[in-house]
Image (cartoon, rainbow, N blue to C red):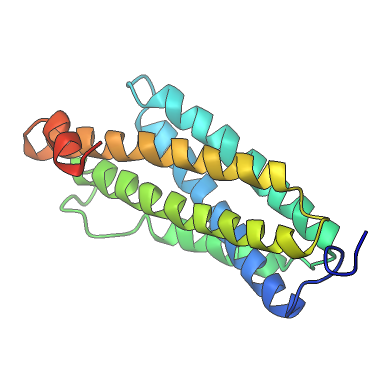
Length: 180
């Protein structure tokens, strides 16, 4: 094994911060999807949201494993902060004081679709790390990137369906306009 492929990471302290930020964000995503499962139980979205939750847990564990393999410390306070932040985000002005607004689902699907894009970027960054350190399994990272692509595709379509349901229109026309 060459020196360039084992331990060739520059700025390990910055990689620690970066991975901890992504790990903390995954906690917020997990909590949001849990809430969405409750709101969409029995709907066409319930099963796919449960699948997404299972995948998010798996990704969280895989990221912790990569960090452990690379010797990067986990900063639990960041995860706790995101957990609290997600709970506080539930207190918002959505046009309804005591009940869930139809707008809530649209905003949640939009947020998740954007968050999955960000998560995919994080996996792509880890793919670059794998180029200089063979402790990062390229095949695992490539699988996570592909999974994020599938998640984003579904979330984008679901978001368009929810938007059409809330405001009118056809989700297919949004798909056509976007070239999907």
